[in-house]
Image (cartoon, rainbow, N blue to C red):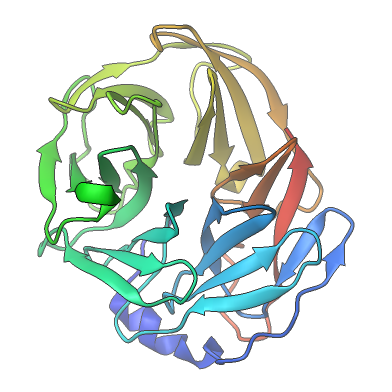
Length: 306
């Protein structure tokens, strides 16, 4: 996931039409509206996916059977949509350079929460959901943000900053993309994060913020250009965006070691960033980083067998 400035949000606002045309499904790709500039993707109920727009903060619903898209979250001034997750009829969205987290009603798009995570210049990149909290990564500062989920999962009005300690270290270069993707174990006690610039995978104690390196074996011992991650059982899918591939990592029971078993590639990949799962398939949005922004640019979600 890449760095975003509020200036870019304003500059690309012209792509924010209210009505979205139906997307077409062609083979293993699902078309998104032209100029969409996707980043995050999340699995919803049934065959539904949710896909965000980096510069406008919009979110659409995508039907994987028909390819039809419907706008759920409209453009709001000064917002962005980077990583996102669906949970209990809500969408949790990382706000990038805004330093905020947004929670929307997944059916109506109405605001549930707009939470300022930090007032410092930074980049809130991805989000994972546990039974008791939503966890957001910060790609500029060595910390996570914990947004507690109260009674019936209602998100609190403020978040707690959890400093990261242990093996994980951030460089002093503010241009580096540090911790990026995040996933959580079912019990919520352990988090997994990947550091884009080093390609190293870490285990995080959700109570203390302590980090431990997860050594990798197999075809390589690092995951360069790592972006979004998805944990399914003890299989971890790691999107390597500019390398146009997904590493499939098998973790041991203690989540202490991992083996890169294989890689998933596809001719239609064009800098995929994040990944969602429905049944036997993975879905990845093409962010096309490096392509100059234009309202005419074509974007798509690529479907591959997992």
